[in-house]
Length: 64
Image (cartoon, rainbow, N blue to C red; front, side, top):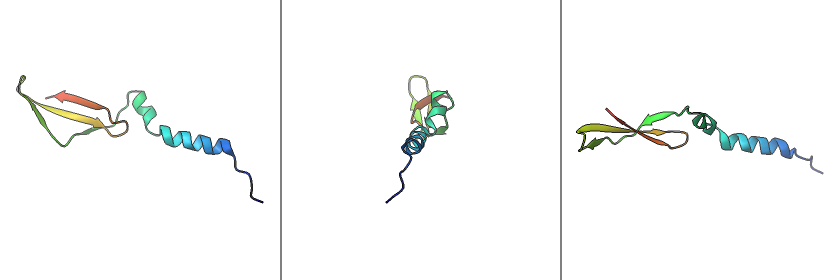
């Protein structure tokens, strides 16, 4: 007969994998990375760069 597995240990590991990295973003600690394409805003005449969070995928635009 096989040994019984601990279901709570499995559930805890699955929950940790699911939330890995997302808890930082929920607290406001995003991991921003520059987007490859650069955009030019015609109305302001400035270069607009977009940054994407590598963990949650949130997009932030900066004018600079």
